[in-house]
Amino acid sequence: KNEVEQSPQNLTAQEGEFITINCSYSVGISALHWLQQHPGGGIVSLFMLSSGKKKHGRLIATINIQEKHSSLHITASHPRDSAVYICAVPNTGNQFYFGTGTSLTVIP
Amino acid sequence: EAGVAQSPRYKIIEKRQSVAFWCNPISGHATLYWYQQILGQGPKLLIQFQNNGVVDDSQLPKDRFSAERLKGVDSTLKIQPAKLEDSAVYLCASRQRNGNTIYFGEGSWLTVV
Image (tube, rainbow over all chains, first blue to last red; front, side, top):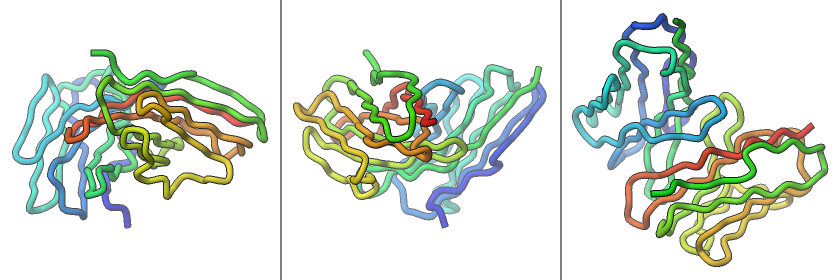
């Protein structure tokens, strides 16, 4: 079993739709990261959160520490949001456990 | 602030050939990671450096992969000889010693044919 599980693996949405990507983890954490990877590009950190909710533009990330669950929401989705979204949690060895990613395609 | 720089961005080689990737982390970042990301999977740690010392290389296939960070700044990752299954994106990342945020480079895409 992976330490970090994401769902769904693949997601196709129409432009304007509200999108939710889920992440569950099995280890104790100090913070959880949401990362974005564009085709042909590197990885960009979107959020780091340890409790509650954070918002940046149309992106919202929430975390429930007790339930070991986090969600990434995209409101009013746009084709430029098409990317792979990866959930990552740090381990005690100063490294990260990564989810396998959610591949999002937003169709105009 | 300059980000993590990697080169080359793309490389196509034949199996059994060798390849080297270079990474320049963010200035002052003591921790440097090399990850391998196969299409459809999350990144897998190959090696972690703290300054010029290796912290963890347990998942590095040492019969063909090697990495160094001689002066505690730049790092190189070498594959020799390459196999078809080495086709992947090789991501370099860096982090401040006590920082929580990890910064990734653009990645080096390797195709072995």
